[in-house]
Length: 322
Image 1 (cartoon, rainbow, N blue to C red):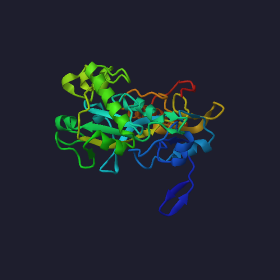
Image 2 (image 1 turned 30 degrees about the horizontal axis):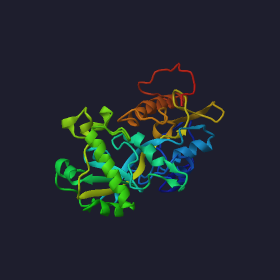
Image 3 (image 1 turned 135 degrees about the vertical axis):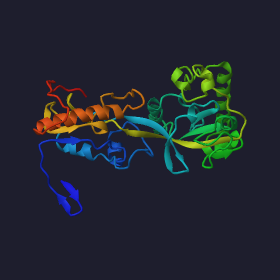
Image 4 (image 1 turned 180 degrees about the vertical axis):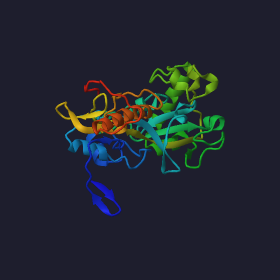
């Protein structure tokens, strides 16, 4: 069924390629399938799972439904979802949960960091690290600048507090816990190693940190000073979901019994991601979308007996990949 200005009309065709993106903007699908909560996804709002529902109606087998391209975000200007990348790796920053404690390696890759937001507290019956907060000390703001602002000019949407007690009010934690957390962090920095969560152990951790100390822990390890501090809420979010119909090597959608569905193909975030829960690096969605989109388009064109520019005849077996 195709929606037009004149109304809906039914079309028939030999081949269909589902390339509608993921379902991160569909609350019902998110609740049903994802392994943890997401808030304020920064992608396009039309990623509502239309292709997924089409594939399900056609009897598709599904894969990677619990996984997504996880990322922490902050709300710039109080409204715009913005990827939290550089600032959490700079010396003079830590992240706290609502209990006032650190809960992860703040400088880890953003997809892996997403797992920390899914930790469930079975006693309190809530996600242990939601809400979370990024804390930046004044020395960091003065030295590096944050969120696109020049050094010494923090953006107005960051909340400024003068003391750890005021920080505790923002976080909603016991001030004694905040003081203990900051003291523990500063002791670890002084010793040159984050033995709690391993921040700075990997070369990757300092990639967005202080480049003068790159390839050493000092690229990301720095004490939290005495104030003032700048604070913003951090949300566990996603760049896009990974789940969708399983496909063959040529991206033909597989049915629940494992056989290919005639004429139906999928590509991009609309198909089950072959990477599963991991993230190969920057462009982790774009490269597969280009390659698998071409494979799906060429196979769909051949199935419909249409010319496909540059496509070669394939002798690939129709076996399950993802």
